[in-house]
Image 1 (cartoon, helix red, strand yellow):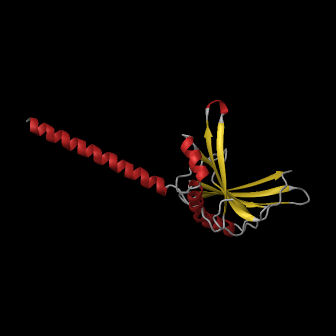
Image 2: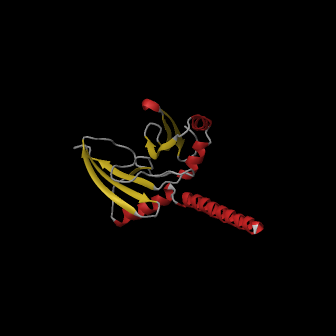
Length: 205
């Protein structure tokens, strides 16, 4: 009888372990599959632009931790994938300084939503982004292997990637990835580290 009880307990333990391992595998798989890289999302955005005959130039893409008051926060995983990418298309009138803005929110399930907006007095003239080679997963890998980023992350428990964006660097005439890791301490004691990566060569700027 005692032997039967021991065997029963062993079977129960094995079942529990199988459930735990299966749950961990599922979570790891879900984490990997829950995001989308920037270039994959850009293909979806390009289809929308073409179908809606949008003529505004492409200005940039971002996956930040606080994207919009109207949308849930984007989640950036540890492989350079995001649950939401925001593609921005805009142009500014040189006479009225009105900005015509078109944004496409591409979600990791490949759904997308579009937002039109106009504003006044926010004049800027930025060269459109026409070519970039380094995708978001490559940029993330380059950044996380940077010695300065490694040191910051190892000495700031609870840090998180708050900014992940691609933009045109007007001063140096090139496309650039910007990644910022942020740590919020007590009493608004905020530390952060930002790294810039050339989106064509992969070099740290």
